[in-house]
Length: 369
Image 1 (cartoon, helix red, strand yellow):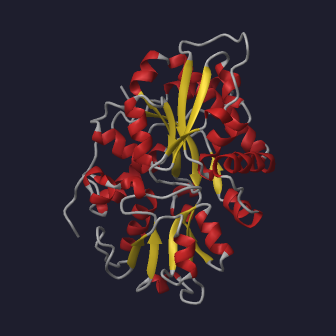
Image 2: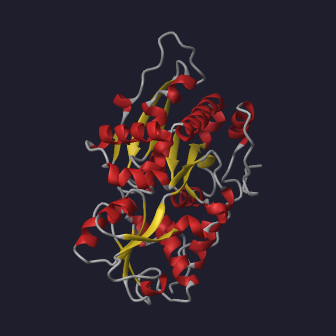
Image 3: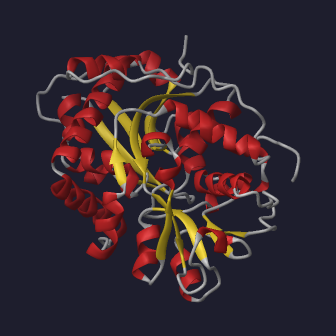
């Protein structure tokens, strides 16, 4: 195994614009698109907060449904009053981090790995995680003709989205737990780890180029629709079957200058998650409608129905699991041990939760002082 190095120095993360995916849980790519035309306008005459506008970013993915639905249903705009919300969508974690650093967005929905990378690369100066959004939605799906049990994974070709991304780290950790050896960087060893863009993973599966994949939703359900079988749901590997897949980040500069706007967005997020959990079918339809607007094509029922069921929408950032995910990356040799102290600031989220009569959430000792 190669010597430990920061994730941000890996050659794949230097070219991480290729990371997956359009329409998946931890999707990555390179483009961002202005979704402003989809955003409800601020109510005429409504009182503005301390900023005229707040720029948010997220992926056109099911595990970013809090943002998809919150924008689609006007739930964020309702909390922001006369402050306009401008939404942009991204297919790349690093692209969203770059946009945050450049001031192109103020607040974003993003996965744990780019959050950790963005925080450590800036020496803790550019972002804070301020809330949770989603848990789960990651599965190991295999060709049932070739793989009938977990032990049969040894010697097979299994796809992950890309070296160093959240699912790749999880799969490498699972492999190590089986007592098998794989060189993390090359993917060669007792299992062939094939880094494959989620957009083409279903085609790779159909052509027998891979025997299975450790992937987020809805790619996992797309593989099942092609005859694949869910061999393992990653949630079963975590305490209480919960682990962070999407959290909310903010520019530290914007947080300092406009805490009232950040609080309003968090209030909108909390209310959106409550609405999603109380109205799952209506929320699923809303998310699919938003995806159709963004991509030009809605997900079919055979894909979105099982995918939606495997995702939990939560205000809790599940901070301890982010720390564990970082430890898994260190164990795989993909990350030098990071100092994540200060990555969280849950002050405003807990203020909102308390006002809503909900339990406050914990930063696992990784909060800002």
